Length: 452
Image (cartoon, rainbow, N blue to C red; front, side, top):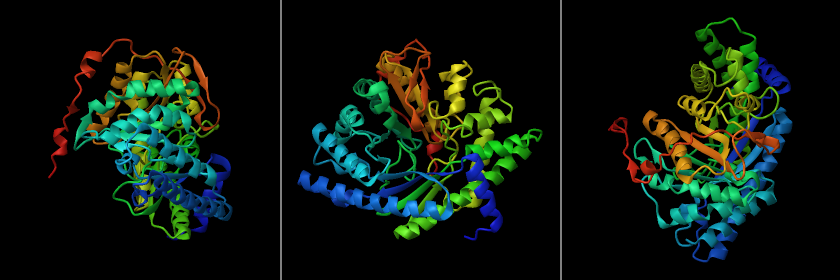
């Protein structure tokens, strides 16, 4: 891939003035070859493999940061879904021990997060899957870096409501066991989960991947916002073209770093995820991009159209720049991790219902939002099921990452600081779907799944 002098200067400007960075380099690691009937030996093998690769990732990523001057904000590991390798060690105690082993391996190497402590349960649950879910409150509250996921459905298999119905109680228990429900920030429930997602908390190393692979997640809301602000009079077609060209440049920078890092590590390069990933830093907000379109605050009527335009342009620009686009690739609209989203909730412009509507056209779903801790389990399950149904029917990835915060009510503010920012507690519809949710079973796959 040839990089021109002009692209180098443009990239430097994006880094210096518009918060461009490589949001994450995530190393996917297969742990199936670590399985051992002796659990102590099993843990030692897992620690050694994860820690060894993590140390190398940190070392080579830092060299590239110096070489190109592009910040690599997070270095992460994603492992084989843990339930797949714990079938012969299927107790809550051993799941917790394995989580602590992964946590220590990551911490000792200086890795930010390790993902993959989860299960694929889209058509049913094994004993190991159920045990893992039961162990999650302790895992999420007693580890600092371990992230967990569940994939509970897909367009070709439908939605496993029995698995969803286990989550409300689990999340509330995890919230009680961790300060301000922070443990819940490390858990996400998916449908149509991609196997090459580099972002947490949903990253895992897919069973169809090589033994080791490198996936890269870029950022760039500030870059997109700057070009939108420079072109306030153009129509939607012209605006889309401007965003496409900008994302093209961002993606090229991400692929350059990713391919060189993979070559240095002597492993296959996987994908570059072109998602616009916001932070709480000034000028690094997806919500502010949408407001630069002409939306007074996210949540106002017109916001769904704006998100749709942004999503489409981001995907087209990334696809032009790379043949290895993957993961989620679109735009995130988290509440707590985006200063503009926080402001919109606090001003009453953005409700939970409108946020759900926006997720019909965004790349992920209901992300990093807080609700009162006394919301009934069945209502939490119903919020999850509603969001995931959007993904099933529309053949797209959707997910939910929520924090039911004990002792808090709608309007309260939960301050985490750092990447997680501040979470305004959102109001939840007080009417119940408990009788519907207790039916359980599986939402059948839609007719669009019959493609063969």
